[in-house]
Amino acid sequence: MPDKTITCRDCGQTFVFTTGEQEFYASKGYTNEPGRCTACRGSRQDRRGSGPGGGGGGSYERRPQQMYPAVCGQCGKDTQVPFQPRGDRPVYCSTCFETQRGSSGGPRRGGGAR
View 1 (cartoon, rainbow, N blue to C red):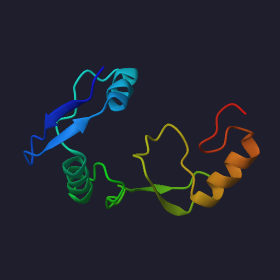
View 2 (tube, rainbow, N blue to C red):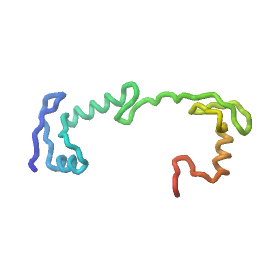
View 3 (cartoon, rainbow, N blue to C red):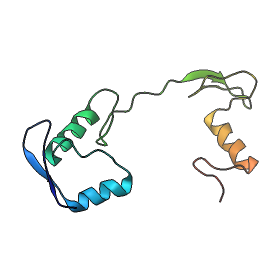
View 4 (spheres, rainbow, N blue to C red):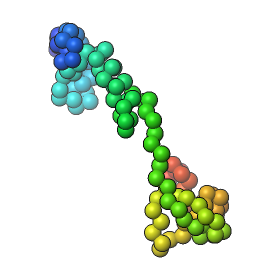
């Protein structure tokens, strides 16, 4: 499989799609060749990452999370939670939640089978 010369759809410059890159694309199951050179791909990712809503690039502002008022089912303290309470299950403040979670023996946040 020989190297391919491709014209970038953004800047019009040609770039080489090497045999190694072609093999990598094939191993990942990608069926399309790249349409942009490395520089244009990078600047496109930077633009996507800095706009509203984030995207790629790893540098985005996180939107504030919607919080809902609730009353702790254990201590009765007013609190806020990141979900709409349904009323059929108790809601706990962060302190009581940690106590409940620690005593229940259930999986920890991000846990699963250990």
